[in-house]
Length: 242
View (cartoon, rainbow, N blue to C red):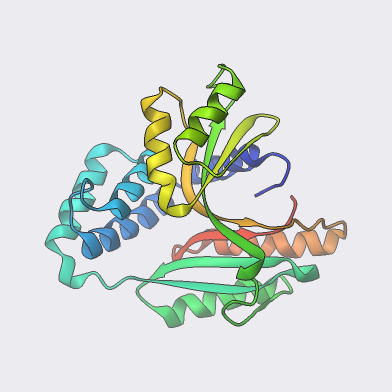
């Protein structure tokens, strides 16, 4: 995400998702299936499933589609063979990239991810080669257009609920939490009537890198676009200051 306007980037991503709902619904369906397999079909007793449901709703997935996905997964647990896999590597000019995927064919996914890096003049690295440059955090974004109350009041509500950090951006507020505390802080904000633009566990770069070379920017964008088009890819994190 950009170091200057995180919410602008979220809106950009959401617009892309809205333009390709078939893909995002496929991704979410896989996540629901894996969550049900690992913890059962009741979101009240399955935190991971509750998170996926919240993510699905934020992407405008209809409730009946979510419920059908849960029921299908519950009756098909033995046949769910998706697994999570993470790739790390470098884009042009040493930009750090982490790719989270959920796949039923690791050979296919690895080949596609490697191809995306290669076509953008980057390369896959070894596990851990760039993840040390990121912090895993729960991240909550609040749109200023949707929340017009006092910023200090919002900050205190978040911190009292267990948030680690609060910052104000041009068009939004960002709240960071320990990943395990995300759901608790999210619920506290919702109970206080605060509208949330997004709430998810993400990887936050410790430092952002500026790119000025047009060729490097073009190549990096090519890699990111190819990864975005891959149905196996769940999320992509990088430290490019877009």
